[in-house]
Amino acid sequence: MQQDGDQDRINIAIDGPAGAGKSTVARMVAEQLGYVYIDTGAMYRAVTLSVIREGIDPSNERQVGELVDTLAIGLMPGKNGQTVYVGGNDVTDSIRSREVTLNVSVIAANEKVRISLAAMQRKLADGKGVVMDGRDIGTHVLPGAELKIYLTASVGERALRRYKEVADTQRISLEQLEQEIAERDRMDQQRAHSPLICASDAVVVDSTSMPIEEVVATIVHLSRTKLAEAK
Image (cartoon, rainbow, N blue to C red; front, side, top):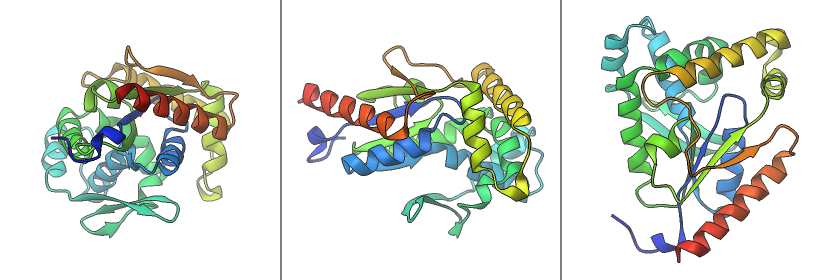
C-alpha cells in the first residue's frame, strides 16, 4: 500500500559482489536523498554471528533455518552508518569479524534464511524512499524497484579495498583475500536460491577506477532522473 508522499520517493536496489563498495555507496546515496538505508548484508551477517554463538554448524540447514525465525534483527541509523542489533544487543562490530566473513556465504545460501530475511526486507521497503543493497535485491527482494544498480569492480581492486579495511589483528595477505573474494563470488553466483546475477534492467556501474564520490553522484543523478520519469 502506498502512503502519502510515496510519489515523491522511489526505491533503489544496489546489487553486486563482495567488496564492490555497496554498503558505503548505498549509505551515502541515502544520505544525499534523505532516504532510509537498509544493509541486507548486515542482516545475513547477524544471522551468521548468531549461528556461531549458538554453536550450530553453518552447513546444518535445518538448525540454521529454525534459528533464524527466533532472531529479532534490528537496523538503526548510527554515528558510523548503520547500527545492527540482535535481540536488542548491539552487534555492529561483531558481525564484521573474520569468522563471520568466512561463514556468511554458507548462511546466505540457506533457502529458509533467504526467505525469512527477504520478507523482512520487503516490509521495510513498503513505504518507498529506501536504498537497499545486497546480492539479490533487484532480482528477488525488490524486483519492482524503480532504480536498480549493479555495482562491481575487479577482483584485485575489491581485495585491495578489503585489505585496507582489515584490522591489524586480523591481517592476512592480499593474495589470500583475492582468493577468498573470488571464492565468495563463485558461491554467490552458483547458489541454488536467489543467486547473484545482474538484473536485466539494472544499470551497471564499474567502480574499479572511480572515486567513491563519483559513484555516488552517478547513482544520485540516475535516481533523480527516475523520479522525474515516475511523476
